[in-house]
Amino acid sequence: MWTAWLGLALVAGCGAEPAPPKPAVVRAPVKAARCFLKFPDVRAGHAARARLERDISRYVRDRPGRVVYGALDLVSGISLGQGEHERDFITASGAKVDILAALLHGSAGRLDEGERDLASRMITESDNSAADTLWSRVGAGGAMSDFYRRIGLKETTPGPSEYWGGTRTSPADRIRLLKVLINGGKGLSQGDRALVLGLMGRVMAEQAWGVSAAARPGDRVALKNGWTPRPFEGGTWAVTSYGRVVGPGRDLLLSVQTDHQPGEGTGIQTIEGIARLIGSRFDSLTPTTTRPCPTRPTF
Image (cartoon, rainbow, N blue to C red; front, top):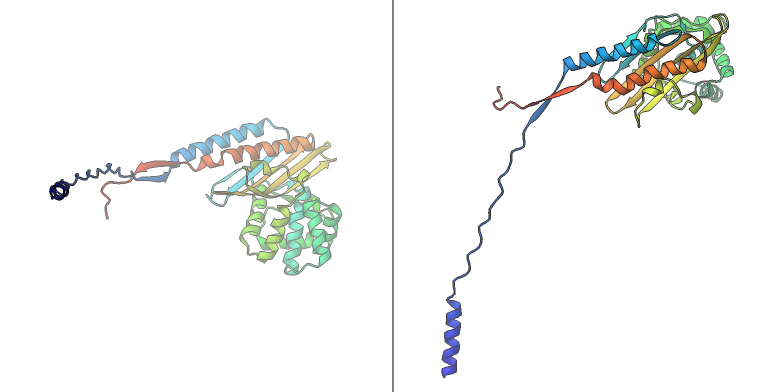
């Protein structure tokens, strides 16, 4: 009996123990995220543009021969240029894009297998024999003059007779041609434009110099270059390059034309120097500034 009473006392005693209090949950103070807005810094952009144009002018001034260029970014709308409306620079092989565009324009894009092969060799390999054939098939200079008028190239004159390489143009007209190939209209279908730009994007590696120097890592380039000796111009060279450089936040059209160059290599160096200056500093032309959001917005 005593053992039973002792057991009951112990059970009763344990049941009477109060439960330990639960610790209170302490929450860390929450910091409200600050709100900021970005605005274009117009003044800084103008200053950056002035510095870039000044530096390009200094660079060109120290290079031999004549040098002109034009640039337009389709994303920001910013354009640059020096002598971009000078229309007496010969294109040399740069005219091969014109020939293909005119051929597509006249045939409503219906090229046969042989013409497509000629077009591919003419653009990607800069095959002169293919250009001769297609120049003749288009209708040579007379038909090209009509084509230029139709697509709005007012500063381009086709080469005489069979000499397509003597076509004269300006950087501004090279950019106009690129805009037609990109934006469409003017009698060129989406398929036509894709064909031309696709071939310009597959130019063989040894001919992919020039405005490609404006590209950042990962950018895509479509271009056509021209180079030719000028025996009646003191044995100098004409060297040109124009094309499109596309990447994040940028769709840059660029044309650089030179003549009276002492050699092909010198012309290439000049073109790439200008392209590199523009490509490496173009983002600085659209700077932004950050400001706190208004605390009491008005409506």
